[in-house]
Image (tube, rainbow, N blue to C red; front, side, top):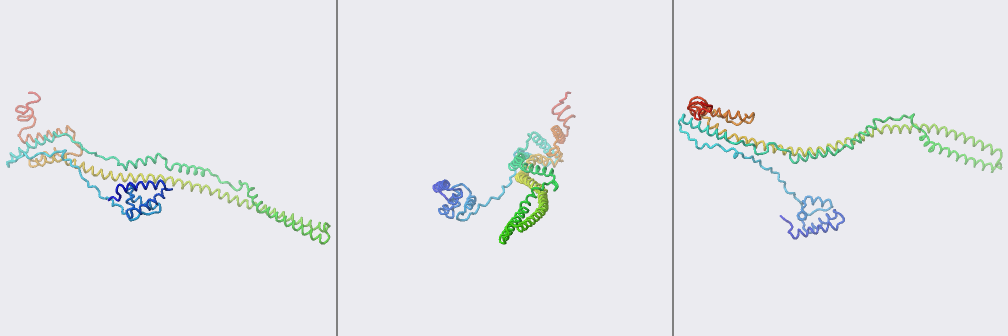
Length: 411
């Protein structure tokens, strides 16, 4: 049931265009449309906008939620039609008309009825033999469905696109680099940079502090000598010399210990860096492995989607093929029915025709074999009807004196 008349629908469409033209963003436009629709149409807001825009109400409600709004009322999706179309087999009986047996009247006399049925059998056999070959009018084997074609095309596109190959090549390059990696030894490492760090950050600072203490001590010695009136005297010189000697000794000790500690620090730092360097190839290999796995997953997902499409199409084709096979079996039954009529008619007089005229579906005889078979059966019927052979001899249908057609091979 329509919500909008033509005039309201046109006005709503124009208003929607105005909102989109003036809004700062699509989300703002969607939000304003929802608000105005709720105010104008109430519970039918979603259905009204769906009529005006030709967009499904479910999709519109999703867009509204994305803009932070909600259409008034509730939406009930239409029930999906899950009924499968009924299978209707094809009727092929018109291609193979039934034999008209209505003119056959039996007398009740076995000998006379035998002759009547034999004559009718010859007539109907000739009728069947004269019918034209009728091929199966429909497609026997179904081709790919559109879904299968789409899946095949998607696989072809994936194969040609090289999806995942760049990542796999990069992973292979990393693996090749790691394979050629030779770790460094401590003896090959230049320790000077590490020692310089310790010298600058530890030893030099300790020496500067010792020198500052020396300078402060010298100032104290000078101050005390001045107070004692011995400034610049021999005693002051002796004290300062002793001070310098102690400083030189302490500075030498600091430098010696600093050099030893700096060497140990350098070795530890170099070992730590070497350990990190040796671990780097393993980390790189892990990254390469993850990259390769991601490439495989990309390809696997792509091909899996294509295979799902193919499988859906294959299921549909398999079901259609079953119906087509059933139609073919119906075609064969319709083709065999006239022969079955003839067999049933001749059954009371011995059924000699049954094997000659029964339809064969496997190992079909050649045309010559069929003609010979029909001739043999016809000869049997002729002999049963007249008591004379079909070919040769007196009273035969072909050849010899007294035959119906005379001697076709001369006197």
